[in-house]
Length: 184
Image 1 (cartoon, rainbow, N blue to C red):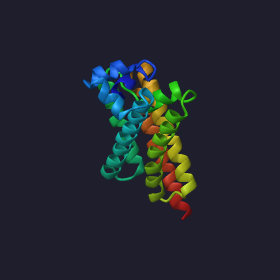
Image 2: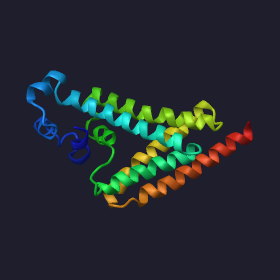
Image 3: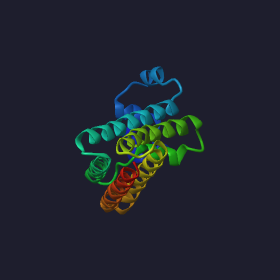
């Protein structure tokens, strides 16, 4: 479902396509997801959340700080988008845009996914001296910029928007971290 949402959208992905793509019998699908497509959609959003959160945490371990972690994360996403021929993007944003007003359950899963990316990003920023409120605010902006640049990159069939976002985000984090260090 996750792959199909990325390429066809949530609305454009039917249960038959999911079963065919997964080579799963209908009975198994309904046994594990008795609430059908919505349940599978929630599970797909939760999987995407874990994958992206893992990417952030891995980047944080590799980088020398929050700015470097953001840059590595964005560069990795740019590679994924480019290598897919601009077919893959963020399934969470797709589900949010398509179903956010139609299904509270899907909207809540998407909100939880975004929060699962904002929280570790805020933690990295706090480790660099930002207070909790400023770290939360900046982390929200960073995740929002990444999500928007993925969409624009897919539309333009270019990773330039993601590259620009990596530069701006890294500079913004460095500035805010330096300012926080100066006020301590």
